[in-house]
Length: 311
Image (spheres, rainbow, N blue to C red):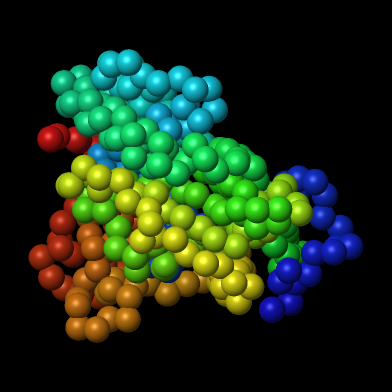
């Protein structure tokens, strides 16, 4: 644990050093699925192209962000499609030109669904709850030093808080927008590390407030409904420490380029290959030798060299 959260007076500047290791909650969620989804990230064959499902989430998020920051609402599907295209082109982690993935009819059809979901967000979550919550932060990217590795390398945590609102004079709630093909069960919300890490990450910006609760506002595409009341998580100091410790251990593994492959589902309970270890869902699939730990029909498949979307 040398260096973990040993921050005070330890020579950190206002920005990470040039060789700093910068990690985030999405990386940790990936790391928990399989370490090599992150360890192979810099390989030339690593393919981080978005699936249509993931890109839908980015587009929906862009519509909500635009409304919260400017008050603007798209009037028709074509406008929503352009917002979506631009959001993907300027994605901070992996910018993509989605016009190469699908024809205009497909993009416009998905954008129409996206716009319908946004209007539903307005008439359900926003009118019922969101507009009544005093905002502290909206769409704010933050970095905070986590510690220094034994070799002297800085480790920083980075993330973008969708929204943080006040619950009183000192308490606050973190809010995150999500989409899913079938919605989220509560267990998925509880096992997502974002709420604990973001709560710690935003603390310096919202004092005297402290994040004590997180809410995932999730769009279920199958049933066309937004849900959030069953996805509220109360945060504790133990949860925060455990999440940051996991982040630290991941940083140590990334720095040393050491990890463990996990082709099976978490826990392995006879469930065989996990969804994350199949060609469509693993960006490291084509070059990963560990997929052959399970010699099944999936291990022989190849991830397409060019992403193609269809309805």
